[in-house]
Length: 370
Ligand SMILES: Cc1cc2nc3c(=O)[nH]c(=O)nc-3n(C[C@H](O)[C@H](O)[C@H](O)COP(=O)(O)OP(=O)(O)OC[C@H]3O[C@@H](n4cnc5c(N)ncnc54)[C@H](O)[C@@H]3O)c2cc1C
Image (spheres, rainbow, N blue to C red):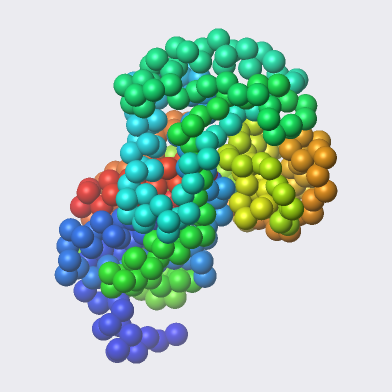
């Protein structure tokens, strides 16, 4: 397809910043750049009709780590690193709420619960024995105890009679958050072109030549925010990690309210619009789930459904309405990769399972590199 003179002049000329990816990171990066360089022409390229990675697919937990996750992270990261991860998530959530407003994203601080399977009493005992030490360690940040103990008031089955409760945890409406972000971006005069996939880029003199599946053009600077798809364009260590989800039809008098982590966070569920959203199960087949292909597997979907029947809603009739998957970007460290790759190319990728929490901040940090 040959583009017209007008198309080239209005959409693809004098681009100061080209952002690849319209997820939480790409959109926040664009907003920050616009605030700093008000006259700059900013173009976002997105391969999907909608953002097509994790930002419109996630579970909408506004969380910063369950007790078992923090204890687990302390085995592979230093104390200072884990504290920094938690601080970043808390700060990132504040940036998200300040940028868009609690009402716009339907933020509700209903609290988060960690549940322990009856079959894993060792994990429960380990968490309970270290709870007070972790609370003391986190006190300078939260000013009060983060983790308390609650009875199994939701009557889940096959789990320990006590939960670990985190009163600071919240939830958002993921769709509303992305709608609000996109509206803000359009309002600032930033252009987004959908169904355009960046295939290659080449740094030449003072600009970057960009080849897409539709056309070629140049930009002064390129910012890559493609998370789980990053290794298709750059050589940073980011592995794709698919995560599968299902949601029930509305359930009358649904009692369950809050965000719930089960089995070291391998499963997570929450209430939304009188429904239960449940995701997880990557640990059943890590190898198959290391992919950028959007698909559901029988193994994981059957397991999620069984968990609903036996544990989460043992006495409630339900039907599944939708099932989907999203692609995360992970690595052997939990820290995101935010860096300059060459003179005019930058990246902000590898957000793991915490992009709702840190995405706004990573977008800001990416923009600050320029
Ligand atoms: C099922 C699921 C549940 C989750 N639950 C939570 C949660 O409850 N709380 C939480 O904090 N985090 C959660 N996450 C993680 C969170 O959603 C992500 O960390 C976050 O959305 C990452 O944002 P991003 O902008 O970096 O990446 P993405 O949202 O993946 O955006 C990257 C974009 O780049 C586009 N792209 C890729 N390659 C190209 C290319 N070559 N050309 C053009 N465009 C391209 C993609 O289409 C995509 O839209 C979850 C993730 C999943 C999948």
